[in-house]
Amino acid sequence: MEALTIDSTEEILLAATGALFLIQVLYYFCLYNRIHLRYRAVKRGDAHFTQELPPVSVIICAREESENLRRNLAAILEQDYPDFEVIVINDGNTDESEDYLTLLEEKYPHLYHSFVPDSSRYISRKKLAVTLGVKASKHDWLVFTDANCQPQSNQWLRLMARNFTSRTQIVLGYSGYERGKGWLHKRACFDNLFTSMRYLGFALAHSPYMGIGRNMAYRKELFYQQKGFSAHLNLQRGHDDLFINHITTADNTRVETDADATVLMQPVQRAKDWREEKIGYASTARFYRGVQRWLTGFETLTRLAFYAVWIAALVVGILHFHWLAAGIAFFAFLLRFTMQAVIINKTAKDLGEKRRYYFTLPVFDLLQPMQSLRWKLYCLLRKKSGFLRK
Image (tube, rainbow, N blue to C red; front, side, top):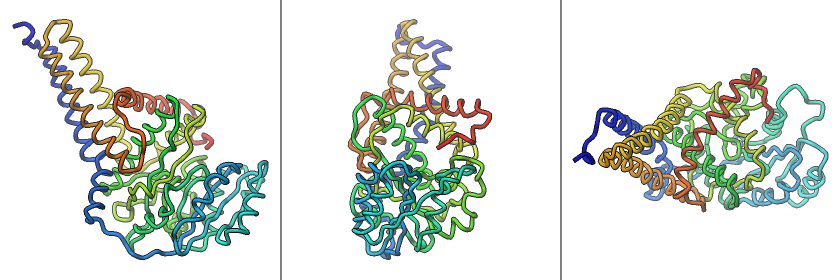
């Protein structure tokens, strides 16, 4: 009968496991499942879209990225859209970007380019580049992406524009990674997918709090109403996530989740580049308005706590030969893993991701909050964390 008994320590551990499991269930079904629910609503015809296709200005900031421009710019210039312009702000003059853009303008009359002055040293060059692009634009709707990103299809602009309703001022899209190899790339893909499930999930729950400049749109008037980036001009980062955090509301933001509306980045090659990007976003997260950053932090904390208590309950149960306690602990993990695998992989499929997460899911699920906490700790230890360079 000893195998079927549970002592007081095991009862506490199992109770904690159950409570943390329920918290995780709430996060997954109420937040992380939002993209899949949106996908189903669109398929059923329950989502409302506008039929108008207003003129748009696509703004791309490139920092000595001639190879990326050669690889990706044509896919943007050849979008199936009636009236749009593409503005490339070239930052740097040590590669062939200037010559290539000048040559390309002869073929595409709706392509324009400018440059960031070399004398600009006391302001974030990315923010200055975005500002120059906004001022050079002719149209009210601005669509943003990066030089290293390529739309999944020629319907990207049409799908983003179908969200330009009279009440909409901001549209957030998804950006993923191209197919690649290596452990680092797999980690980055999972982290990117999970981060997107968070901020897009909050936006779909009418509680948006950030955006990522690789795939988003907003009205030009918002930029001027906020006086550009004047609210956080002293920070090297924040042209996308922090700016959107300051202008977004429950009613003015929509999300485009169609797989043909995603843009893909090239695979991660160097850990340093990925680490700098994540540290950059972590450095601006402390300036976010709203409770969302605390809610995401609470999810991270409860996730780590869940792993700690179910493993403790499993080990204690095995050591005491209390197989019922050990079995309950393992079953709680199995239930959560199944819930995760279903929601995460369905969302990945809806967004056009080719990669699926099964055996690697528990590893990435544990590494993701640990690395996030490490990056946030790093930023806190830096006295001038707000001046981390992009």
